[in-house]
Length: 125
Image (tube, rainbow, N blue to C red; front, side, top):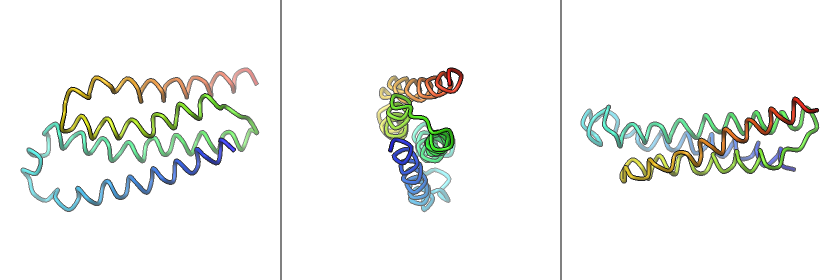
C-alpha cells in the first residue's frame, strides 16, 4: 500500500511541477519580474518548481523499488512524503519571507533520512 502512495505522490508532484512552471512562465519574459532573473524570489520560485519534479522522481523510485523487491519501508515512505510537501512549501515561503530559509533542514533532512532508511533496508535484506 505504501508503494502506491509514493507513486501517486510522484504523479501529483509531476502535475504540480507542470502547473508551478506554467504560471510563472507567463511572466518570465519580463526581465525585471520579481527583481530579475537572479533575484532571491525568482530563484526560490524556480527551486520550488523543480523540487516538485525532483522529489516526484524520488517518490516514484521509492514506490517502484518497494514493488519490485516486495519490501515495505514505512518510515522512508513517510519521510519522503514529508520532503515532497515541505520542500516546495518552504521554497515559496522563503521567496517572500527569507527567514523561512532556516527551515530547509526539515525537507532536506527528511529526504536524506528516507534514502538512508531504504539503503539500510536493502543492505540488510
